Length: 499
RNA sequence: GUCCCCAUCGUCCAGAGGCCUAGGACGUAGCCCUUUCAAGGCUAAAACACGGGUUCGAAUCCCGUUGGGGACGCCA
Image 1: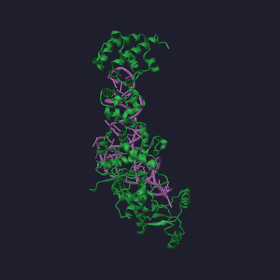
Image 2: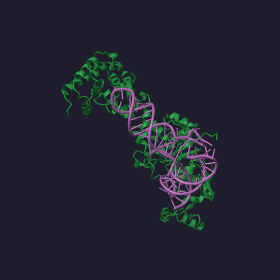
Image 3: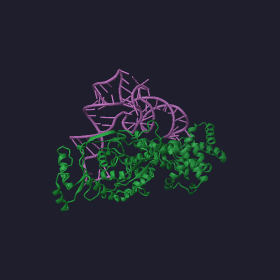
């Protein structure tokens, strides 16, 4: 009880880091961090056919991006290594020998194709099928004969009579009849362990105290409990978390589009937003709070808060979380994160990289845009008119805002008024006051002039607040953009707006 | 088919016998703010799967039905 908790995430490297796997990793990590425990990363690559190095790299990369760091595992080592199951084969062999010697397991010479046929035949009739223990009943001589003939064999666990039960932190007491468990294979005929064996042996060796994993493992757990018993080890605490579904209430899979962490990374989601969203999928702090930073999540996390029902992945809400977390970031941090995006758009200047005027100015631009953005990429879109030298008018904007008569004169008057402001008067308040004065003097609604000016400054109909923006665009560029607008209006002399 | 699990607004959650006229959030609609679009604020529509119990009292406990999911591999 006073033991420091040891938890682990044990992905099999047969694909990319799935969103569900990421959440499982997160829950384990959260619990370990919450209780000053140890978080172990172990790669379950006993299926040599399907495992790959690329996949390992991708999974580690995804975890790092999410900020889920491990205390023991690939890259960092630890006292319970190695952390790749493919390098722990000897341990499994030892365990199997012990189990066979103690009568908990036995060799099976039945061939996979054979068993498959029989199983399918039984299921075709609508009946269930459990291994019939043919090899348990075969008798000494027959067994020896098969062995001598070099027939490949697997090792099966001999499931005892009785019932098996365990207490699950989210499900409560689970109690099942052992007759519903077959004598499962623990060692394949090629000498590799199966999942059930390796997971238990490793969790024992690595002194894992809490196993938090997907609900799809709930029905495997009795097998594991049996194995712990046969190995003379005490089982850990289990917590089976509900699965994540797509909008069609089917288990989340490639059919639903983005399901890997990398997909979300590429789509411009913030790791903290994904973490926050994932944490709340199947877990609740108990109250109404929804926006959590990484550290507040660690503080709030409990296994008891994990709910029972499967959860649908709501993309829209993830987007909202992304906006929330961008709002939480400092403008400086946003600048750093947005740099690559701005570079791509050709809007980045070297001077932005170091502290100083231009960077301070860019930070102001970002601050102006921050609240209206859900993705970093949107900064580029909105900031474009502020960062670029010239603007081009969108035709829709021209049609909507530059077609009323007499605009040229109004704009000229505004330009003169703005030209009369010197550098330090060129700030939002004076700019607004000045524009409204011009509008009054010319008996037009301020809105008309504001909208036209917006088009002149950005080329678009939508933008952040005009005056704050003009302030940031600065006196020189503002004056020349107004001049350009006048020219445009003169050339496209708007007369009667008769379409 | 067998075993196991689950069941509150469209979605994610709150609710651990009276505080529930069922609360919050996303989304949706309307209003306010306003120079546009957002953001923000306010308001609205929207759920305890069904049937039996237990109890003075049930979204909460029990049983059943229905629905959903998972597991039944020499995959993990």
